[in-house]
Length: 196
Image (cartoon, rainbow, N blue to C red):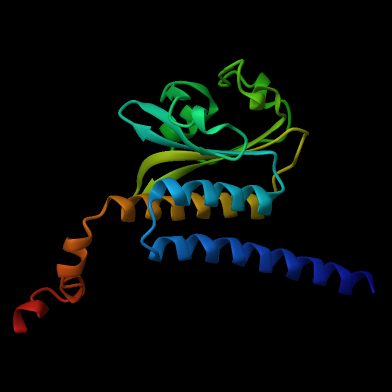
């Protein structure tokens, strides 16, 4: 009976994970403004990971700029900035690597104290780069107020979300007229479009 309950719980978790990834995928194929989509993705991540905070930063020059958050008023979006050399978030962007800290993240020597952000006192921190074709364009952070061990599944999921967010950003910056005019087959078979 216990084994059946465990399998049922795992199946439910897998279905929720699939739902999260499907929703983000659907945002990729819709013609929606990025400013509308990113807060929705952040909310989905918070709901799925049962976290207290999710912050999404994108790179602007040599800085990371907060572009979406579940925990901050809209006036913080665009105003919270940190250099690529600062904080845990900057480390993830520079190193292009996942970072997980299960307790006392604020004691890590790389941590940057903002003093006006509630996350400054949160215990657990999970962060993944947002990547477009091997290039880091941002960072997504998930935080818990209390200590939290991040499972391998959570780490893999946030990495995948970071990759999907990269696709969302790339699509938002793409020239739709160029996409419509492109001969996609030419990407696979050079010169195939010339036969038309």
